[in-house]
Image 1: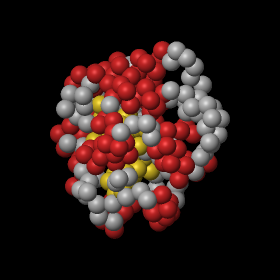
Image 2 (image 1 turned 90 degrees about the vertical axis):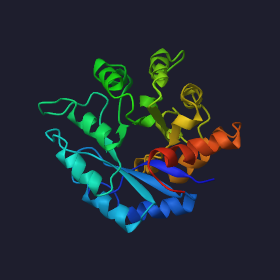
Image 3 (image 1 turned 135 degrees about the vertical axis):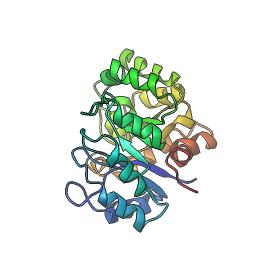
Image 4 (image 1 turned 30 degrees about the horizontal axis):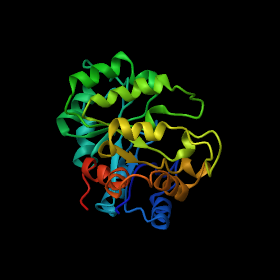
Length: 254
């Protein structure tokens, strides 16, 4: 099974360099990863360096200034970056508030969306989904799931209704993000299974959230636990969740 981690941060200031991520990937037998630019950093040059130093091992999602008209998005895309990180309610500070979404659509980029459930259900994101039906959008962090959620999970179910949009996918994080008790997670709530049932394995992709996951269950457990949790699924379904979905979306070759 090819394992792809679709949510990693790396850098030279806020986060650790790529060599640290590679060490953890090799220990966990993770083949490829997507580098997600961290909030506040619009200099994507280190990501580009990582892409060129390790061809076909990494993909990247950029961040650009709110004032960018699309020129910088095009510049970074030419350097090999295949995605952009935009909040669900993101609007550019230009004459065209949807300029960043429009550029992503034109350049066939993947949009990685950090979010809360209210922003996913808001009018701004609804406009994006209706305006760009062919734009590949990936919701981060299980749509904002967290350990404070309680049955009957009505707000979370409302978010899951967005699965009716076929261009919308979602990331499955390490379970430490939404379990109340720490690893080994004896109180797993049903949100991960609800997501797989709503979106299907072909539209779910695992993403560790490295390195913040190191302060929760740790990198290895962020993969091993969900693999075990979904052991009741068929092998093909698990292959989609932990690798094949990412391979098909982020432009990797096997």
